[in-house]
Structure formats: structure tokens, C-alpha cells
Length: 317
Image (cartoon, rainbow, N blue to C red; front, side, top):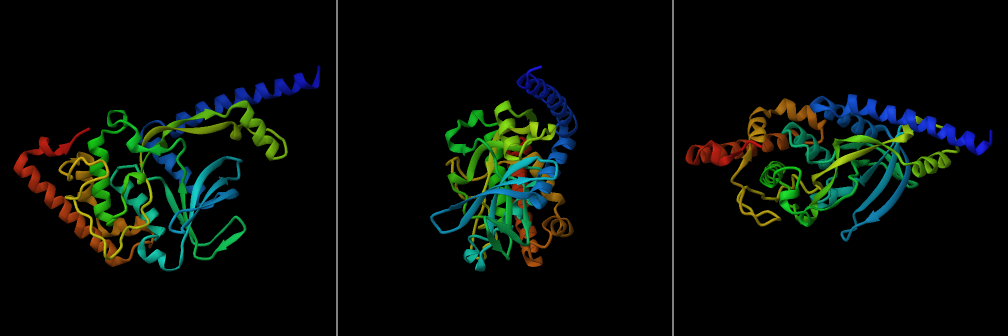
């Protein structure tokens, strides 16, 4: 048999194995709440321990450096992430990158799942540069564009819920940097499915690795397009003031509705739970201040419900 025919048969066999692998991954990893949790664990494990195999340096108008990196695990699986190095003085509070992790963890505790997974590495070497103060590794969402370019009725989550959750999160962490550019519409990290990687991409990956076959490299993640909140490093600045009365980036008015899920979960936040989730990122007085703001948010909506009725204030969807 011609060598090229043997190569094609080998590719077809690997492709079929990859398709079976994709089906198995979808069955065990993305079906229902347990599947989303498993996907979160995988993503965070990759962010925490993945080897950096590629990095591209970027710098914004404020001189803050971010890298687009490619991480790889021991099975050849790859994932893109943003790396934000921690800078001395945290940019006077405007660039305290560990707060990216705090925002992610708090959003999970509230059941929102609109903030990309983020972990903090205490020490990092990226693009031949050593960062002894470490930095945040944040999941990179594919296909991203600004959310304000997408009609509200096309969002995968009701717009009222997105804007209410966003404002409540920003009040809790006192994030005064929520402009339109920090709302994205992009592929979700845990709501989606595994898909086969196209033949051309497979060949490129194998060539880059020096040949060989791996069914693990033949499956990738395709997230559902969803609203995504990014850039929370300005949170917890002592001089910030964010409240429910403030206008949002979409000019829909002050926040006067709350998701039933958020309304319930706010009541169960406590100091031990927050401290365990934050892993030392927040100081005890910051946790106490967050809980005080939580109390104010609940008191506000309890009063509003008493005045207008539950159905006029609480969003069940």
C-alpha cells in the first residue's frame, strides 16, 4: 500500500477515536451543573499548573502589560489565557490583579458564572521575563466582541439579569471601572461542548510537537456565546464609591431588580466562606466591608419588595 494511503488510514482511525473521545468528554463534563463544575475545575487546574508554551506581550494606554499565553498540560491539551503581572504598588489600586481572582470566586458564590476563571500564581516566568510578584492567569474567551454590539434580545441571559448581577457584583467589590469595554459577548468557559479539531489544525499541532498521534489533541472546547464581565483589578480601592443608584454602561437606569438566585445566595455569604474562597487575597477588614455592603444591598431590596411586591422586583428567569 502506498505510504500516503497508510497515512490517510492512520488519520481516519485517529479521527474516529477522537470523535469517540469528544462524545465521552461531553457526557462526563458538560451535562448539567455537575458538568459545569467539572469544567471549572479543569480550567482552573490548567491556569494554575499549565506550562506556558507561547506568549504574546500587549500593553494598554496606561502602561499595564498583559500577555496572551498558551498553556499546555501533561496530556498535550492546550488552552489560551491572559497573564496579568502584579506590579509594585498595584497601580495605586487601579491594577491590583489578585482582585481578578476575588471577582471570579465571588461571582461563583453568587451563582452568576459571568466572570472568567482566574487563579493567582505567586511566581511566574513569561516570555523570558521573571515576575517574582507573580500575577493572575485568566481564561481567554474566544470569539469576543463588545456586548453593546449585540442586541439585548439576543443575549443568552436576560439583559435585566445581566445588568443587575453586574451592578451588585460591582457594589460588593467596589469596582468603579465598569465601562462598556468591560462587557463582552464571547465563548463561555463552562457552558458549551467539546468538538473535534479540524484536520489542518491537527496536522499543525502534530508538526509543532515533532510528529506522533494523540487523540487528546483532537478535541477542543467550543463555548456558548454569552455575556462576560472582565477587568476587575480596580476593585476594593479605598476611595471608590459604587452604589445601586448609579447608571450603567447601557443607560437603562438605576438597579431596581435582582435575580432570585442572587437574592437567595447573598443571604448565605459569610466570613468563613469568603475567606476560604479568596485564599488570602482579601484582608479580614475587606471581607467585613464586603459583608456590610451585602447587608445594605439586601436591606434595599427587602424594602423594595415590601413596597412593590416580590414579582415586581425579583427576576425569576
